[in-house]
Image (cartoon, rainbow, N blue to C red):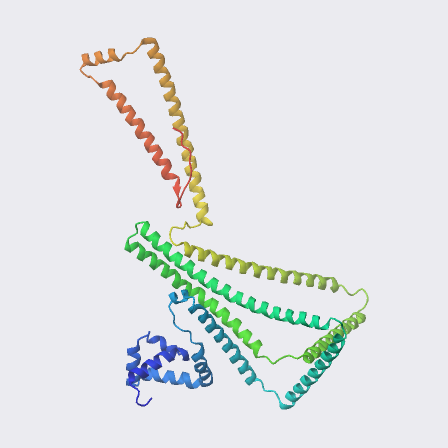
Length: 447
Protein backbone atom coordinates (compact mmCIF):
# COMPACT_ATOMS: atom_id res chain seq x y z
CA UNK A 1 0.00 0.00 0.00
CA UNK A 2 2.96 2.32 0.48
CA UNK A 3 3.81 2.22 -3.21
CA UNK A 4 0.15 2.33 -4.32
CA UNK A 5 -0.72 5.30 -6.61
CA UNK A 6 -3.06 7.94 -5.25
CA UNK A 7 -5.61 7.13 -7.99
CA UNK A 8 -5.96 3.50 -6.87
CA UNK A 9 -6.08 4.53 -3.20
CA UNK A 10 -8.83 7.05 -3.91
CA UNK A 11 -10.82 4.50 -5.93
CA UNK A 12 -10.47 1.84 -3.20
CA UNK A 13 -11.60 4.27 -0.47
CA UNK A 14 -14.39 5.64 -2.65
CA UNK A 15 -15.97 2.20 -3.09
CA UNK A 16 -15.36 1.22 0.55
CA UNK A 17 -16.95 4.34 2.10
CA UNK A 18 -20.58 3.13 1.55
CA UNK A 19 -19.72 -0.01 3.52
CA UNK A 20 -18.75 2.17 6.49
CA UNK A 21 -22.04 4.15 6.25
CA UNK A 22 -20.30 7.52 6.43
CA UNK A 23 -22.78 10.40 6.24
CA UNK A 24 -20.52 12.91 4.47
CA UNK A 25 -20.06 10.60 1.50
CA UNK A 26 -23.09 12.30 -0.07
CA UNK A 27 -21.24 15.60 -0.27
CA UNK A 28 -19.15 14.22 -3.13
CA UNK A 29 -22.16 13.01 -5.14
CA UNK A 30 -20.12 10.26 -6.77
CA UNK A 31 -17.28 12.59 -7.81
CA UNK A 32 -14.15 10.42 -7.66
CA UNK A 33 -11.84 13.27 -8.73
CA UNK A 34 -12.98 15.48 -5.87
CA UNK A 35 -12.36 12.66 -3.40
CA UNK A 36 -8.92 12.08 -4.89
CA UNK A 37 -8.05 15.77 -4.53
CA UNK A 38 -9.24 15.78 -0.91
CA UNK A 39 -7.07 12.77 -0.07
CA UNK A 40 -4.06 14.17 -1.87
CA UNK A 41 -4.36 17.57 -0.18
CA UNK A 42 -5.21 16.15 3.24
CA UNK A 43 -8.57 17.92 3.52
CA UNK A 44 -9.47 18.09 7.21
CA UNK A 45 -13.18 18.49 6.56
CA UNK A 46 -13.16 15.04 4.99
CA UNK A 47 -10.46 13.09 6.89
CA UNK A 48 -11.32 14.13 10.47
CA UNK A 49 -15.05 13.16 10.34
CA UNK A 50 -14.09 9.91 8.60
CA UNK A 51 -11.54 9.01 11.30
CA UNK A 52 -13.97 9.98 14.08
CA UNK A 53 -16.68 7.84 12.55
CA UNK A 54 -14.39 4.80 12.20
CA UNK A 55 -12.71 5.05 15.61
CA UNK A 56 -15.95 5.62 17.52
CA UNK A 57 -17.60 2.54 15.96
CA UNK A 58 -14.59 0.35 15.34
CA UNK A 59 -16.01 -3.04 16.54
CA UNK A 60 -19.22 -2.65 14.53
CA UNK A 61 -17.35 -1.47 11.45
CA UNK A 62 -14.95 -4.41 11.67
CA UNK A 63 -17.89 -6.78 11.65
CA UNK A 64 -19.53 -4.82 8.81
CA UNK A 65 -16.35 -4.89 6.72
CA UNK A 66 -16.06 -8.64 7.22
CA UNK A 67 -19.68 -9.30 6.32
CA UNK A 68 -19.58 -6.99 3.27
CA UNK A 69 -17.14 -9.35 1.53
CA UNK A 70 -19.85 -11.98 1.32
CA UNK A 71 -23.11 -10.01 1.32
CA UNK A 72 -22.38 -7.19 -1.13
CA UNK A 73 -24.80 -7.83 -4.05
CA UNK A 74 -23.38 -8.35 -7.50
CA UNK A 75 -24.27 -5.77 -10.13
CA UNK A 76 -25.87 -7.84 -12.90
CA UNK A 77 -27.91 -6.54 -15.85
CA UNK A 78 -31.54 -7.56 -15.99
CA UNK A 79 -31.23 -9.36 -19.32
CA UNK A 80 -28.88 -11.89 -17.71
CA UNK A 81 -31.75 -13.25 -15.61
CA UNK A 82 -33.43 -14.55 -18.76
CA UNK A 83 -30.63 -17.11 -19.17
CA UNK A 84 -31.62 -20.56 -17.91
CA UNK A 85 -28.10 -21.25 -16.65
CA UNK A 86 -27.65 -17.95 -14.82
CA UNK A 87 -30.94 -18.03 -12.88
CA UNK A 88 -30.24 -21.24 -10.87
CA UNK A 89 -26.76 -19.99 -10.03
CA UNK A 90 -28.21 -16.68 -8.88
CA UNK A 91 -30.73 -18.49 -6.70
CA UNK A 92 -27.99 -20.66 -5.23
CA UNK A 93 -25.91 -17.52 -4.60
CA UNK A 94 -28.80 -15.91 -2.68
CA UNK A 95 -29.37 -19.08 -0.66
CA UNK A 96 -25.69 -19.18 0.29
CA UNK A 97 -25.88 -15.55 1.37
CA UNK A 98 -28.90 -16.31 3.54
CA UNK A 99 -27.12 -19.33 5.05
CA UNK A 100 -24.12 -17.14 5.80
CA UNK A 101 -26.38 -14.58 7.51
CA UNK A 102 -28.01 -17.21 9.71
CA UNK A 103 -24.67 -18.80 10.60
CA UNK A 104 -23.11 -15.44 11.41
CA UNK A 105 -26.06 -14.45 13.63
CA UNK A 106 -25.92 -17.77 15.46
CA UNK A 107 -22.17 -17.35 15.98
CA UNK A 108 -22.63 -13.84 17.37
CA UNK A 109 -25.34 -15.11 19.67
CA UNK A 110 -23.08 -17.88 20.95
CA UNK A 111 -20.27 -15.41 21.49
CA UNK A 112 -22.60 -13.09 23.37
CA UNK A 113 -23.85 -15.72 25.78
CA UNK A 114 -21.88 -15.55 29.01
CA UNK A 115 -22.78 -18.83 30.70
CA UNK A 116 -20.85 -19.96 33.75
CA UNK A 117 -18.91 -23.24 33.62
CA UNK A 118 -21.14 -24.70 36.34
CA UNK A 119 -24.25 -23.95 34.29
CA UNK A 120 -22.67 -25.46 31.21
CA UNK A 121 -21.74 -28.59 33.16
CA UNK A 122 -25.29 -28.81 34.51
CA UNK A 123 -26.73 -28.54 31.01
CA UNK A 124 -24.32 -31.16 29.68
CA UNK A 125 -25.26 -33.50 32.52
CA UNK A 126 -28.95 -32.93 31.89
CA UNK A 127 -28.55 -33.59 28.17
CA UNK A 128 -26.62 -36.78 28.84
CA UNK A 129 -29.37 -37.97 31.18
CA UNK A 130 -31.99 -37.25 28.53
CA UNK A 131 -29.84 -39.06 25.98
CA UNK A 132 -29.66 -42.12 28.24
CA UNK A 133 -33.42 -42.04 28.77
CA UNK A 134 -34.03 -41.87 25.04
CA UNK A 135 -31.69 -44.79 24.42
CA UNK A 136 -33.50 -46.83 27.07
CA UNK A 137 -36.89 -46.04 25.49
CA UNK A 138 -35.58 -46.93 22.02
CA UNK A 139 -34.21 -50.26 23.24
CA UNK A 140 -37.50 -51.12 24.95
CA UNK A 141 -39.48 -50.28 21.83
CA UNK A 142 -37.03 -52.26 19.69
CA UNK A 143 -37.36 -55.34 21.89
CA UNK A 144 -41.13 -54.98 21.98
CA UNK A 145 -41.49 -54.57 18.23
CA UNK A 146 -39.12 -57.39 17.30
CA UNK A 147 -41.53 -59.83 18.86
CA UNK A 148 -44.03 -59.01 16.12
CA UNK A 149 -44.24 -61.37 13.17
CA UNK A 150 -44.19 -58.65 10.46
CA UNK A 151 -41.46 -56.54 12.09
CA UNK A 152 -39.19 -56.49 9.04
CA UNK A 153 -42.06 -55.54 6.76
CA UNK A 154 -43.12 -52.76 9.15
CA UNK A 155 -39.54 -51.56 9.37
CA UNK A 156 -39.23 -51.41 5.58
CA UNK A 157 -42.52 -49.52 5.28
CA UNK A 158 -41.51 -46.95 7.91
CA UNK A 159 -38.12 -46.50 6.21
CA UNK A 160 -39.79 -45.86 2.88
CA UNK A 161 -42.24 -43.48 4.56
CA UNK A 162 -39.40 -41.48 6.09
CA UNK A 163 -37.60 -41.28 2.75
CA UNK A 164 -40.80 -40.18 1.02
CA UNK A 165 -41.35 -37.51 3.66
CA UNK A 166 -37.82 -36.21 3.18
CA UNK A 167 -38.35 -36.21 -0.58
CA UNK A 168 -41.67 -34.39 -0.12
CA UNK A 169 -39.96 -31.73 2.01
CA UNK A 170 -37.28 -31.25 -0.67
CA UNK A 171 -39.92 -31.00 -3.41
CA UNK A 172 -41.89 -28.47 -1.36
CA UNK A 173 -38.77 -26.36 -0.87
CA UNK A 174 -37.96 -26.59 -4.57
CA UNK A 175 -41.55 -25.64 -5.43
CA UNK A 176 -41.29 -22.60 -3.18
CA UNK A 177 -38.05 -21.53 -4.85
CA UNK A 178 -39.51 -21.95 -8.33
CA UNK A 179 -42.65 -20.06 -7.29
CA UNK A 180 -40.50 -17.18 -6.10
CA UNK A 181 -38.59 -17.21 -9.39
CA UNK A 182 -41.86 -17.27 -11.29
CA UNK A 183 -43.17 -14.28 -9.33
CA UNK A 184 -39.97 -12.36 -10.01
CA UNK A 185 -40.15 -13.15 -13.73
CA UNK A 186 -43.85 -12.21 -13.78
CA UNK A 187 -43.11 -8.89 -12.06
CA UNK A 188 -40.38 -8.12 -14.62
CA UNK A 189 -42.78 -9.07 -17.44
CA UNK A 190 -45.47 -6.70 -16.09
CA UNK A 191 -42.95 -3.89 -15.80
CA UNK A 192 -41.77 -4.42 -19.37
CA UNK A 193 -45.36 -4.61 -20.61
CA UNK A 194 -46.18 -1.36 -18.83
CA UNK A 195 -43.16 0.33 -20.39
CA UNK A 196 -44.19 -1.01 -23.80
CA UNK A 197 -47.78 0.27 -23.37
CA UNK A 198 -46.51 3.69 -22.32
CA UNK A 199 -44.27 3.88 -25.37
CA UNK A 200 -47.09 2.71 -27.68
CA UNK A 201 -49.55 5.23 -26.19
CA UNK A 202 -47.02 8.01 -26.55
CA UNK A 203 -46.46 7.06 -30.19
CA UNK A 204 -50.15 6.53 -31.05
CA UNK A 205 -51.74 9.63 -29.52
CA UNK A 206 -49.48 11.93 -31.50
CA UNK A 207 -47.79 13.36 -28.43
CA UNK A 208 -44.89 15.65 -29.03
CA UNK A 209 -41.57 15.50 -27.24
CA UNK A 210 -42.66 18.28 -24.90
CA UNK A 211 -45.79 16.32 -23.85
CA UNK A 212 -43.75 13.20 -23.12
CA UNK A 213 -41.22 15.28 -21.20
CA UNK A 214 -44.00 16.91 -19.12
CA UNK A 215 -45.50 13.50 -18.36
CA UNK A 216 -42.13 12.19 -17.28
CA UNK A 217 -41.54 15.26 -15.11
CA UNK A 218 -44.91 14.69 -13.44
CA UNK A 219 -44.05 11.03 -12.79
CA UNK A 220 -40.68 12.06 -11.35
CA UNK A 221 -42.37 14.62 -9.10
CA UNK A 222 -44.86 12.09 -7.77
CA UNK A 223 -42.09 9.52 -7.24
CA UNK A 224 -39.94 12.07 -5.42
CA UNK A 225 -42.88 13.04 -3.21
CA UNK A 226 -43.49 9.37 -2.48
CA UNK A 227 -39.83 8.84 -1.59
CA UNK A 228 -39.53 11.98 0.53
CA UNK A 229 -42.75 11.65 2.54
CA UNK A 230 -44.15 8.13 2.55
CA UNK A 231 -41.03 5.99 2.44
CA UNK A 232 -39.26 7.70 5.40
CA UNK A 233 -42.32 7.04 7.59
CA UNK A 234 -42.44 3.40 6.51
CA UNK A 235 -38.69 3.02 7.05
CA UNK A 236 -38.93 4.57 10.50
CA UNK A 237 -41.77 2.23 11.45
CA UNK A 238 -39.81 -0.77 10.17
CA UNK A 239 -36.72 0.42 12.06
CA UNK A 240 -38.66 0.70 15.31
CA UNK A 241 -40.11 -2.75 14.78
CA UNK A 242 -36.62 -4.07 14.07
CA UNK A 243 -35.30 -2.55 17.28
CA UNK A 244 -38.12 -4.19 19.25
CA UNK A 245 -37.34 -7.55 17.66
CA UNK A 246 -33.63 -7.10 18.40
CA UNK A 247 -34.37 -6.34 22.04
CA UNK A 248 -36.54 -9.44 22.27
CA UNK A 249 -33.87 -11.46 20.45
CA UNK A 250 -31.10 -10.26 22.79
CA UNK A 251 -33.06 -11.11 25.92
CA UNK A 252 -31.72 -14.11 27.85
CA UNK A 253 -33.25 -17.45 27.04
CA UNK A 254 -36.22 -18.39 29.18
CA UNK A 255 -36.17 -21.96 30.47
CA UNK A 256 -39.02 -24.20 31.50
CA UNK A 257 -38.11 -23.92 35.17
CA UNK A 258 -38.20 -20.14 35.00
CA UNK A 259 -41.63 -20.22 33.36
CA UNK A 260 -42.92 -22.59 36.03
CA UNK A 261 -41.60 -20.35 38.80
CA UNK A 262 -43.18 -17.27 37.23
CA UNK A 263 -46.53 -19.02 36.82
CA UNK A 264 -46.42 -20.14 40.46
CA UNK A 265 -45.63 -16.59 41.55
CA UNK A 266 -48.54 -15.21 39.48
CA UNK A 267 -50.91 -17.78 40.98
CA UNK A 268 -49.70 -16.94 44.50
CA UNK A 269 -50.26 -13.22 43.91
CA UNK A 270 -53.76 -13.87 42.55
CA UNK A 271 -54.65 -15.92 45.61
CA UNK A 272 -53.29 -13.17 47.86
CA UNK A 273 -55.34 -10.57 45.97
CA UNK A 274 -58.48 -12.69 46.33
CA UNK A 275 -57.91 -13.11 50.08
CA UNK A 276 -57.38 -9.37 50.53
CA UNK A 277 -60.60 -8.61 48.60
CA UNK A 278 -62.55 -11.08 50.73
CA UNK A 279 -61.04 -9.62 53.90
CA UNK A 280 -61.91 -6.08 52.82
CA UNK A 281 -65.44 -7.15 51.93
CA UNK A 282 -65.86 -8.85 55.34
CA UNK A 283 -64.67 -5.72 57.20
CA UNK A 284 -67.17 -3.46 55.42
CA UNK A 285 -70.49 -2.97 57.26
CA UNK A 286 -73.60 -4.44 55.70
CA UNK A 287 -75.55 -2.14 53.42
CA UNK A 288 -72.50 0.08 52.81
CA UNK A 289 -71.58 -1.52 49.51
CA UNK A 290 -73.11 1.25 47.40
CA UNK A 291 -69.96 1.67 45.34
CA UNK A 292 -70.09 -1.89 44.04
CA UNK A 293 -72.64 -1.07 41.40
CA UNK A 294 -70.63 1.96 40.25
CA UNK A 295 -67.44 -0.09 40.16
CA UNK A 296 -69.14 -2.67 37.99
CA UNK A 297 -70.45 0.02 35.67
CA UNK A 298 -67.00 1.62 35.52
CA UNK A 299 -65.47 -1.73 34.57
CA UNK A 300 -68.07 -2.25 31.85
CA UNK A 301 -67.49 1.25 30.48
CA UNK A 302 -63.71 0.75 30.55
CA UNK A 303 -64.04 -2.57 28.73
CA UNK A 304 -66.36 -1.02 26.12
CA UNK A 305 -64.01 1.93 25.71
CA UNK A 306 -61.06 -0.40 25.15
CA UNK A 307 -62.99 -2.35 22.51
CA UNK A 308 -64.01 0.86 20.74
CA UNK A 309 -60.41 2.09 20.80
CA UNK A 310 -59.25 -1.16 19.25
CA UNK A 311 -61.96 -0.94 16.61
CA UNK A 312 -61.08 2.70 15.91
CA UNK A 313 -57.44 1.75 15.50
CA UNK A 314 -58.30 -1.04 13.07
CA UNK A 315 -60.60 1.22 11.05
CA UNK A 316 -57.93 3.94 10.98
CA UNK A 317 -55.40 1.45 9.64
CA UNK A 318 -57.88 0.26 7.01
CA UNK A 319 -58.60 3.87 6.00
CA UNK A 320 -54.91 4.62 5.73
CA UNK A 321 -54.34 1.53 3.62
CA UNK A 322 -57.25 2.46 1.32
CA UNK A 323 -55.94 6.02 0.94
CA UNK A 324 -52.49 4.71 0.07
CA UNK A 325 -54.03 2.30 -2.42
CA UNK A 326 -56.06 5.12 -3.97
CA UNK A 327 -52.96 7.31 -4.23
CA UNK A 328 -51.00 4.48 -5.87
CA UNK A 329 -53.78 3.82 -8.38
CA UNK A 330 -54.01 7.53 -9.21
CA UNK A 331 -50.26 7.61 -9.68
CA UNK A 332 -50.41 4.55 -11.97
CA UNK A 333 -53.27 5.99 -14.06
CA UNK A 334 -51.37 9.24 -14.57
CA UNK A 335 -53.01 12.22 -16.29
CA UNK A 336 -56.65 12.54 -17.33
CA UNK A 337 -58.14 11.17 -14.13
CA UNK A 338 -61.18 13.23 -13.05
CA UNK A 339 -60.93 14.66 -9.59
CA UNK A 340 -63.69 13.58 -7.17
CA UNK A 341 -65.64 16.50 -5.76
CA UNK A 342 -66.18 16.56 -2.02
CA UNK A 343 -67.89 18.77 0.53
CA UNK A 344 -68.45 22.37 -0.46
CA UNK A 345 -67.23 21.80 -4.03
CA UNK A 346 -69.81 19.06 -4.64
CA UNK A 347 -72.59 21.19 -3.08
CA UNK A 348 -71.63 24.12 -5.31
CA UNK A 349 -71.58 21.85 -8.35
CA UNK A 350 -75.03 20.44 -7.42
CA UNK A 351 -76.49 23.95 -7.04
CA UNK A 352 -75.11 24.94 -10.43
CA UNK A 353 -76.56 21.80 -11.94
CA UNK A 354 -79.99 22.59 -10.48
CA UNK A 355 -79.88 26.10 -12.00
CA UNK A 356 -78.94 24.68 -15.37
CA UNK A 357 -81.74 22.13 -15.13
CA UNK A 358 -84.25 24.95 -14.46
CA UNK A 359 -82.89 26.91 -17.41
CA UNK A 360 -83.15 23.79 -19.59
CA UNK A 361 -86.80 23.24 -18.58
CA UNK A 362 -87.62 26.89 -19.28
CA UNK A 363 -86.04 26.80 -22.74
CA UNK A 364 -87.69 23.46 -23.42
CA UNK A 365 -91.11 24.99 -22.59
CA UNK A 366 -90.42 27.93 -24.88
CA UNK A 367 -89.41 25.57 -27.65
CA UNK A 368 -92.58 23.50 -27.15
CA UNK A 369 -94.76 26.62 -27.38
CA UNK A 370 -92.94 27.72 -30.54
CA UNK A 371 -93.38 24.27 -32.09
CA UNK A 372 -97.10 24.28 -31.17
CA UNK A 373 -97.56 27.76 -32.65
CA UNK A 374 -95.75 26.65 -35.79
CA UNK A 375 -98.14 23.70 -36.09
CA UNK A 376 -101.16 26.02 -35.72
CA UNK A 377 -99.81 28.41 -38.34
CA UNK A 378 -99.05 25.55 -40.74
CA UNK A 379 -102.58 24.25 -40.31
CA UNK A 380 -104.03 27.73 -40.84
CA UNK A 381 -101.94 28.12 -44.01
CA UNK A 382 -103.20 24.81 -45.36
CA UNK A 383 -106.83 25.77 -44.66
CA UNK A 384 -106.40 29.13 -46.43
CA UNK A 385 -104.76 27.47 -49.42
CA UNK A 386 -107.63 25.00 -49.60
CA UNK A 387 -110.27 27.73 -49.51
CA UNK A 388 -108.68 30.42 -51.70
CA UNK A 389 -106.24 28.43 -53.77
CA UNK A 390 -102.59 29.21 -54.42
CA UNK A 391 -102.03 33.02 -54.36
CA UNK A 392 -98.37 32.88 -55.46
CA UNK A 393 -99.14 34.06 -59.05
CA UNK A 394 -101.25 36.91 -57.72
CA UNK A 395 -98.48 37.97 -55.30
CA UNK A 396 -95.88 37.78 -58.07
CA UNK A 397 -97.97 39.98 -60.38
CA UNK A 398 -98.63 42.41 -57.51
CA UNK A 399 -94.88 42.60 -56.70
CA UNK A 400 -94.12 43.34 -60.37
CA UNK A 401 -96.71 46.09 -60.41
CA UNK A 402 -95.25 47.61 -57.24
CA UNK A 403 -91.66 47.16 -58.40
CA UNK A 404 -90.60 44.81 -55.56
CA UNK A 405 -90.26 41.47 -57.33
CA UNK A 406 -89.09 38.57 -55.05
CA UNK A 407 -90.06 40.25 -51.74
CA UNK A 408 -92.18 37.28 -50.56
CA UNK A 409 -89.50 34.68 -51.31
CA UNK A 410 -86.88 36.88 -49.60
CA UNK A 411 -89.08 37.15 -46.50
CA UNK A 412 -89.53 33.36 -46.41
CA UNK A 413 -85.78 32.85 -46.63
CA UNK A 414 -85.17 35.39 -43.83
CA UNK A 415 -87.68 33.57 -41.60
CA UNK A 416 -85.99 30.23 -42.28
CA UNK A 417 -82.52 31.67 -41.46
CA UNK A 418 -83.89 33.22 -38.27
CA UNK A 419 -85.43 29.94 -37.16
CA UNK A 420 -82.19 28.04 -37.93
CA UNK A 421 -80.10 30.56 -35.97
CA UNK A 422 -82.51 30.43 -33.02
CA UNK A 423 -82.41 26.62 -32.89
CA UNK A 424 -78.60 26.57 -33.30
CA UNK A 425 -78.10 29.04 -30.44
CA UNK A 426 -80.51 27.09 -28.25
CA UNK A 427 -78.64 23.81 -28.91
CA UNK A 428 -75.30 25.49 -28.28
CA UNK A 429 -76.49 26.89 -24.95
CA UNK A 430 -77.87 23.52 -23.81
CA UNK A 431 -74.70 21.57 -24.67
CA UNK A 432 -72.42 24.22 -23.18
CA UNK A 433 -74.28 24.18 -19.86
CA UNK A 434 -74.41 20.41 -19.59
CA UNK A 435 -70.62 19.92 -19.83
CA UNK A 436 -68.98 20.66 -16.52
CA UNK A 437 -66.49 19.05 -14.13
CA UNK A 438 -64.66 17.06 -16.81
CA UNK A 439 -67.69 14.92 -17.74
CA UNK A 440 -70.80 14.95 -20.01
CA UNK A 441 -74.36 15.00 -18.63
CA UNK A 442 -76.98 13.40 -20.87
CA UNK A 443 -79.86 15.77 -21.71
CA UNK A 444 -82.88 15.20 -23.90
CA UNK A 445 -83.63 17.99 -26.44
CA UNK A 446 -86.92 18.01 -28.33
CA UNK A 447 -87.09 20.04 -31.53
